[in-house]
Image 1 (cartoon, helix red, strand yellow):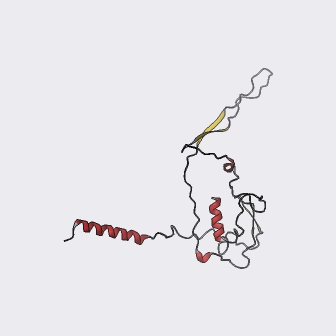
Image 2: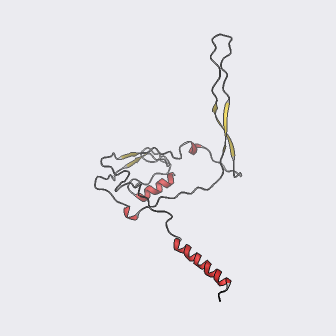
Image 3: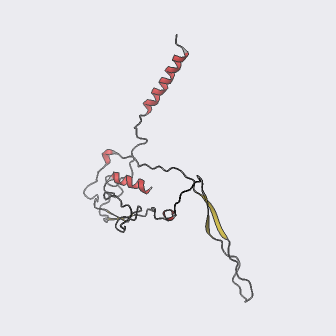
Length: 183
């Protein structure tokens, strides 16, 4: 005769075995992407005859957010008042010397909160057999990035800041890591 404890242990063992069959600790969380490769079939830069200089329109840390000062805080949910402008004036321009002029608009503001949190980024998965593929000799490999949203690097970059990897436009792994860093 099977006791209730043995029955419970057997049921738990079946449940655990079923969960383990569903995935191992180091299984990939998704599936490799088929889009966004630099070169090879469907590559975003695999167009014969394009110019060597590649420009970008990506906003990096030198946008408004990157210009705001940072300072430590003891508060987990700091709240700030922000002036957003002045409302339109009311009234018309006077047609006579002693007539009243337009009334200035009122100051506008908003309240902004900036709670602390955790940010996490990862790269999209890669198909290993896709790395390094080129369509043919016309798939350009001599491209140069003009500017960079990370650290003002590239042709117009200065001595300070983080430069993009030299193989950014040739190496899929460098491209994925750069995409993560920009994000």
